Length: 125
View 1 (cartoon, rainbow, N blue to C red):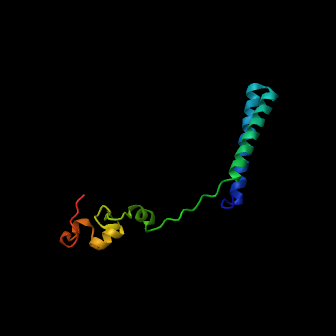
View 2 (view 1 turned 30 degrees about the vertical axis):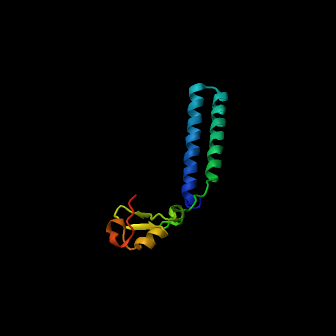
View 3 (view 1 turned 120 degrees about the vertical axis):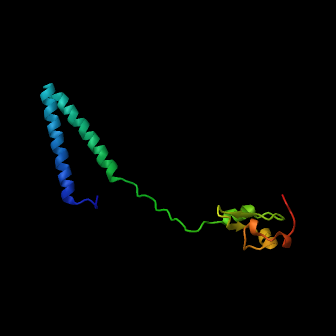
């Protein structure tokens, strides 16, 4: 509540109090029964206390750290298969991840369509 000025909170509190008093007067005028008016006041009090308690205990949102570069360590561990050259490219056909067999066979400068296949082993899966 520190970010809302004290005068604004006071004005809001006075407006709510005035609205409750007007509502109670209208209910008393409409029913003529003080019991109904007091029941209404009791219900509003309970709802007001619940709202007050809920607003006081707001959880602090967790701050997520977003990295500009993705973490490929899990992917590299998953694709590291002996005897199989595996490369992962993005939509623009840029090489983003490759296992050690791919790097050993083809080097790591180009994505698969730009490879010089004559220099590497001929294995088509």
